[in-house]
Structures are given as C-alpha cells and as structure tokens.
Amino acid sequence: MRNEAVSCAEADWSRETPQKFWDPGRKLMRCIRRYQALEGKAGVGARIARRFWTLSHEFWRTVTRCDIELRTDIGGGLLLPHPNGIVIHPDVVIGRDCLVFQQVTIGVGRPNGSGREVPVIGNRVNISAGARLVGGSPSATAR
Image (cartoon, rainbow, N blue to C red; front, side):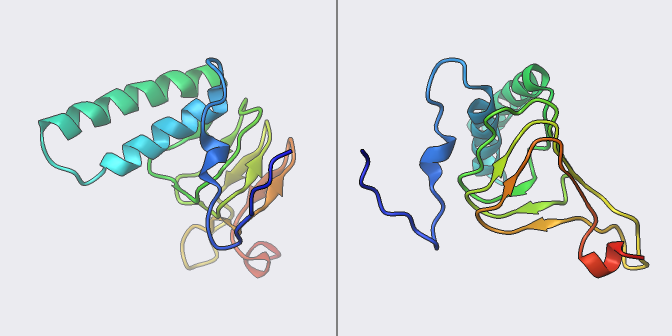
C-alpha cells in the first residue's frame, strides 16, 4: 500500500513515467514533454535532440494511431491507458492529472464570430472511451 499525498496544486508527474518496455501512451507523452522542454533552446545539440523527439513522436503516434501535436498545451500527469484513436486539436488546453481513454476526439466547434472555439479541459478530468468534446463554452455551442 502506497502512502503518498495527493496535491491539488501540483501535477502527479509519475503518472506519465513509462512502467514497462511497451507502454505506448506514456512513451508518446514522454516524446511530447521532451520536445516541449527543448523548444526555444538554441544550439546544434538542442536541434538534434528536437529532431530525435520529433521522429520518436511520429513513431509512437503511428503505433497508437493517436493524433496529439507536439505543441499542444497539456498539464502534467496526463494518462492515456489505451491511446488508440485519440485525436486532440493543437489549440485545446488540458489541465493536470487528466485521464483520456481510447477513441476520444477533442476538437474545434463551429465558429461564433470570435474565431474557432476549442474546449478547455480542467484539472483531474476523466474522459471516457468514445467521447466527443467539440467547441468552447456551452453558450457558444448551444446555438
């Protein structure tokens, strides 16, 4: 039995650590995190490392059939236990310690005059298999 405190203010980064050799969801997230950590850094080493993580991302993206762009704003601790068929628009914001199951689409809704509406997912949100989240606020998509 683990006796660890859960913080409401900080992400549980251990959720994203690969647990075994074949752990596609966590390995995909590792590629995204490493690429984002290198963004904006200059130098040949950073450029080579970004290229490596981009290629690794493409590999895991193909294996999982999961479409999450490298620059997507994702809070720490995102868990993808079955990452097959997940599609997340690059402008979506996802809070920390969320859980997303297979065949989930999080994307753009209809424009309402102010541009494209994308969802903002809060902290500690679980999204079940097959869910479709499109658009921004309920008032923008209720028309």
